[in-house]
Length: 410
Image (tube, rainbow, N blue to C red; front, side):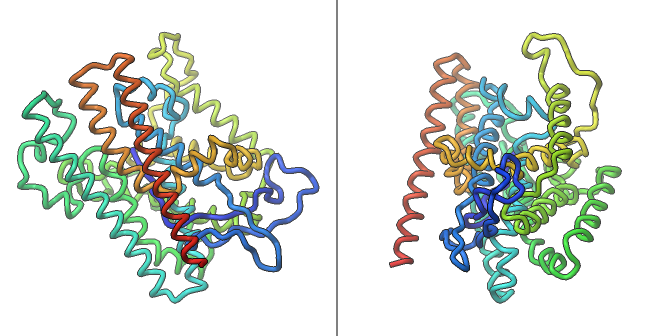
């Protein structure tokens, strides 16, 4: 499940990054990304214009919608999400982008603002994440407990410890108990709380030593999955083991540093592009639900090493390949500027709110499908109503952001 939820403000980059894939040979060098913590004004130093790069927002918006769909098992649309064509799913995309956006929102601010001010912003953001986590937990528990009085609720909708009593609610509030589908924000809170010391180390030793240390911890956890945070509701621990998933977050932050040195895009390597594309084809063939579509199984080999809890190597490579192809491509930039790309970017800009409302919509969608059927009429109703609710909320949030920006400039 999840989210890299919105780390902060917008992020900027050149729309024609030098050396980016699909870029013309005479593409001129353009200034790198602007600060993500501000209002996204597209002015650059020395008269060189900066144009907002919507790729990260658009990719995050796509991931959000896929998570909403994937969390309703009866939804026919989840047959078309990325988990069917790759080892990784939207959760990996979300956490990687969380690291990338966190550096844009907070990492660079440490060189321009007092450390105390930036740390205070990070703590406020974590507090906001906690409030939204609490809201989702309360709505889920209350909804299930009330719904059970009128219609049956399968036991897998909410752990019995919470569905039949409130004595353990304090554990949920302290993040000692993480109900299903409510485990991505706690991961993000932990990673973001560790971001200030991570920035301190990054600025003193550089990205490569940090990546090596982070990768070593990830490898150790893959060899010993018992290294995890405790979860009172699951003896195996957190569904997203923070000790493993921190590697993806760190990679995202380091990728943001690298992209800033290359005009906002990851540097182009044609052999690397070919390797990434080949791996994604292999991943798609291995992951596609052949038998579920009534087709013969075309997988060339069995791939049992896809444990999501510890972020297995196959899953990690999958999301990194996808991310590299997007962030090294000017074609992706142009697509993000189109109508569909801008719609996805709007969702991505308000990812915390979209994720929260989407999670609540998912809960009611599952309950409705379970009790009233999964026919085409119900499928269309749930998906259309859910999309309209998300679209309406993000439109209003965007309108308020525009008004607030105009007021600051006045």
